[in-house]
Amino acid sequence: MLNISITKTTNPKAKPQDESKLGFGRIFTDHMFMMDYYDGAWHDARIVPFDYIPIHPASTVLHYGVEIFEGMKAYRNADGKIRMFRPIENARRMNNSAERLCLPEIPEEDFVQILDTLVELDKDWIPHSEGTSLYIRPFTYGNDEHLGVHPVKNATFCVILSPVGPYYAEGINPVKIAIESHDVRAVRGGTGYAKCGGNYAASLRAGDRAEKQGITQVLWLDGVERKYIEEVGSMNVMFMIDDEIITPELTGSVLPGITRKSCVELLKDKGYKVSERLISVDELITAAKEGRLQEAWGTGTAAVVSPIGWLYYEGCEYTMNGGKIGPVTQWLYDTLTAIQWGYAADTKHWCHEVCDE
Ligand SMILES: *Cc1c(COP(=O)(O)O)cnc(C)c1O
Image (cartoon, rainbow, N blue to C red):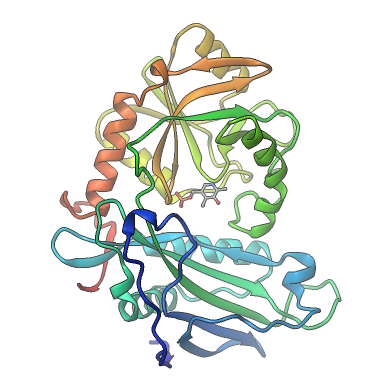
């Protein structure tokens, strides 16, 4: 067991009164976790009052973007317990990301213990309304205090918590997605499979251009041939064509989403034909033109499942299921959220109990 020291705030903040206005990642709880890596080991695991982090102007993260993160949620369940969804998967992925960026790894059981301790301490911040949750953001950054370009010898791991509102405050409305044929997010051999800040830095321009045209997110193509579908913004993507559910295989440039993995399992259990394979933009557009593209949706922790109503490519618009959420998308959303919110039996043992309410 990791020894975590706890310094409680003497100045607790007022909790948000109107849970319908929480939004995403704008409000933070009273405490945060930190520990520092130096001399080849993690030191000084501590929970402290939420505050600014002083940083050396030459710190590696500020210059070379050596940073990785995770995103997960804790939910107030129907039975009064507080649970997280598959935290061990986040622990593993965080370590895979760390390996890619030469950042220090964290033992999986320590990672889960840290989250349990912090979430329990700030559990009163978990909102109560339907669809709300506590978003958990663990992150590690390189923190050498010089400008040399090397794998870091110093790093900091931090966890912050943010109460978030229901993603679909106005019901599940399908989004507009544009296929991006210029910018790319990641290439094989690069950092696409790692959850690192740099991937997002590279994706902002295309996202911004799309947003100015009223489009929610971009659909990325592979970075070499701009031929194969990779993923959407901060979500993995799934298409249903001729009753086959297709999601791009994990080739190294696609982020291995935990929601993606869970959806694939649930769909297969239900008897759907699910293929993790390459899918080219030609195959997709041809299917759309011929009316064989039945449904499309994104998957990720924030939205869980996000239906795609309209696709844009080379100046043309393609509408899916009349711009309405399709039956498979709806089933998937209902099934997965029922497990996460504790309305359905957790037969797969995906939910990890943190504490009582
Ligand atoms: C986090 C993330 C996802 C979704 O992963 P989940 O584990 O399902 O939340 C998909 N794509 C990118 C680029 C991501 O950063």
